[in-house]
Length: 87
Image (cartoon, rainbow, N blue to C red; front, side, top):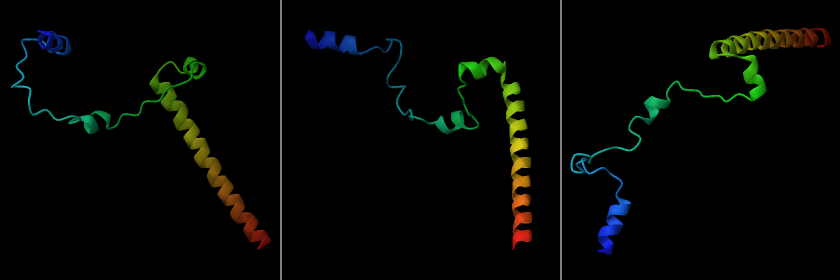
């Protein structure tokens, strides 16, 4: 009788499910598809207040990317000019 009680307690599957039909499942079968193209970033509360939605965050990051790219090009150009004058 104890075995029967233990079996009922550990079995949380509903009685209407047929275990014979549930065989053959593959763990993580769709994991790569579910995570493809997903990039979740958590913002600190103070930053979150400045950006009401994802499009405003994307605009700000693109602007920052453009500025960083232009600044790094200027830095490389000025370094080349310094090498020419000193070299």
